[in-house]
Amino acid sequence: MRIAITSRQYLPVLGGTIQYTSMLASEFSRQGHAVKLITRTPERHPSDRETPFELIRCPSQNTLMASADWADVVLQVEPSLQDVWPFLIKRKPWFPTLHVGHSTHDLSRKDALLRAIQRFSLRFGRPIGVSQYVLNSWGSRGVSILNPVDSTIFEPPPDNVRRDVDVLFVGRMTHDKGVGVLMDALVRLVKEKLVSHAVFVGDGPACPGLAARISETGLSTTVQLVGRADAAGVAAWMQRSRVLAFPTTPAWLEAAGLTLLEALACGCEVVASDIGGVAETGGGFIRLVKPGNVDELYDGLRKTLMGESARNAEVDEYLKQQTLPEVARRYLQLMKSAVNGSSRPEKRSKV
Image (cartoon, rainbow, N blue to C red; front, side, top):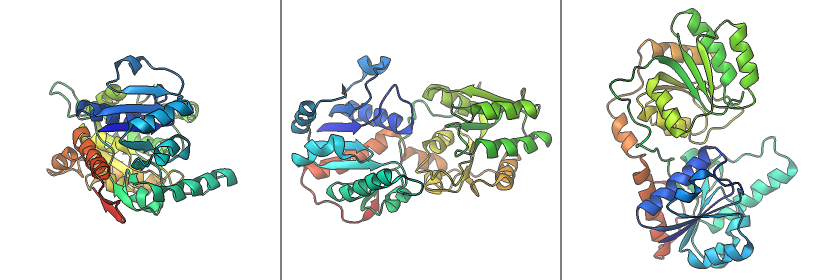
C-alpha cells in the first residue's frame, strides 16, 4: 500500500504523539509499504536523513494534492481538515487518530468551535482511538488500538543491572501530571525509610518549584531531577527502578499513557491515577489510586514498595499484544480493508 501520514508536529518536537508517528511510519515501511510523512514542523532533525520513509515538511497545496493522488490511504495524527482535505476530495480512506479525550472545559470560544468542527468531521473518516475511553469521549464510532511499545528498547534489564531506584517519574514536569502530589508522598516515604532514591525524568514549568521543594525538605541526596531523556535513556531508568509513579491529577485526562506499558515491559511495578484511559491501558497489571489524592498515592506506593505486586504471569502475554509489529498489523488490517472496498465500521469496537 501507499500510506500517507499527516502530523502537524514532528521531530525535533518531543512528545508521545511524535514518538507514535515515528514508530508507525518506520514499521509500515519495514513491512514493505511505501510511506510519506507530512508535517507542519519546519525545523529539521538529524534523523531526517535516516528515515526509511519520505518526509515532507511544510507542504504546499500542490504537494498535498500530489500526495493525495499518490496515496491509497491517509492516517492522520489528530483530526484536522487543514492537511487532509485533498485526500477527502480524492475520496481516499481517512483514518483520523484520537489521542486526547474530547472536552470543551476551559476552552476559549474559538477552540471550542474548533473541537466541534473536528468532532463533526469524524463522520467522514474511520476514527481510531488510542483507548476506548478516548473514542467514547468523542462519541465516535470506530476502533480503539492502544499505543505501541518498542520492545527492542523497552525490555527487562540485563542480569547485571540492579534496581537501585525506588520510585521513578517519567513525563512532563507539570502540576497537572501530579509532580507536586508525588513529592508530598515521597517526603512521607523517605521518613519511613521506604525510599532512599527517587528520580524525576522530564522537563517542564514545575521544575524550579520542585527543585526548591527538594532543597527545603533536605532531600537533595535522595530525590534526583535528571531532565529530558530519549527513549533509550527512559528505558535505562525504568530498568533500574522498582516502581513507576504515574500520579496524574484530575486537571489532565490521560488518554492512554504509553509510559505505563513501557514501564511494565521493563519489569517495573506501576502505581497510577485511575483517570481517563489509564485502567484500560494498564490491563489489570497496575495499582490504581484516586487522582490528586496524596494519601492514596502514598498508600499505593507504600504497599508496592513493601512487596504487594499488581503484576502476574499474564502480563507477558498482554505486552506481546502491544508490541510495535502487532499494533502496526492491526492498523494495516484496517487500511487494507478500506482500500479493498470493505464497508466502513458503524459501531464502536476494539481491535
